[in-house]
Length: 147
Image (cartoon, rainbow, N blue to C red; front, side):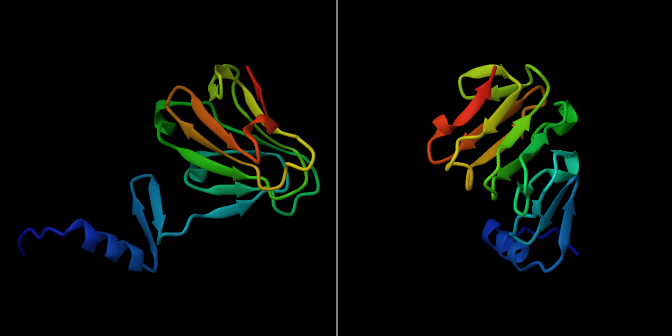
């Protein structure tokens, strides 16, 4: 059988119709849905969490998410955090290894503003040497950034 080329549109259509997991190196595509996991206790993020949405749904206490030490093997890893409970959510990492709003040497981002907790979310992307973390809430000023 000769080489066949697939157009991008056709390839996209085939992947969207896929009804099973498709492993590509260290990434796994599951149709076009994102994996969502609720965490009700403090949690240390691992490489297998890349691409996931981690929530605080169902918790009855403040939650701390801890990012792994950035390494070249984690470069490109990303995870999203969504606060689904009326409790504080904190994302922490190694001192000086987080790029936050206004700081390249941070070590945590924390949403603890009363009446602004539910729905706050953040994204963390590993550059290989640091974590870039960006928070979103009703107002970004409701996030505390440590530097």
